[in-house]
Length: 230
Image (cartoon, rainbow, N blue to C red):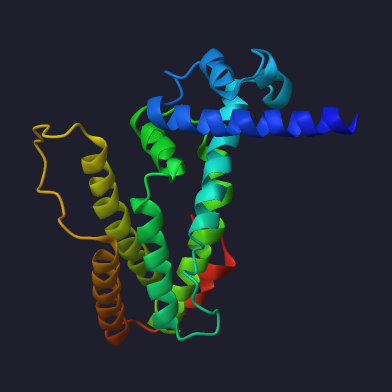
């Protein structure tokens, strides 16, 4: 019985690992259940047995890859929770930059393909996984802006910081993922390494937050933390 249970756990993990790789490379529609089972060394019926079908495996594989990526690059960047807010923002940005630039962060590749060819199958699992991280970031930005910041100011500053990471780094992932010497009709690629990019985003974001704080209104920005961060 113990051996059977252990075998089942191992088979499930192999399916998640194989599915993560294939969904990242090909997306949901171009990845077959048979290909996943073949890559995992599992029986063709294993996906239905362990996950109920390809659709549920898709969501589970994204969650599996997301948790792996977050474990490799904790969102706090190794900065202590009682460190000054500017240091905590620096740690957050550094961790995000490292995660986005790592080709092994397959959750980002799966999400990118999902955005290009939506299935709607990842909406719930992504919301459950990402919302706590965003609330933490919102709380940090709110702290930096001070109690006079409006809800909109907090959201816009958080969005601006995240967008710098997302746009620049997805641009870089796209460059590295294309064939060598391919002709591209796109803006020039960034010739910058991760640490330098993280340092720039931190410096730019803190300067913007300081300016918003200097000119902010008198509404209580902290109230955003009481509700849904969507």
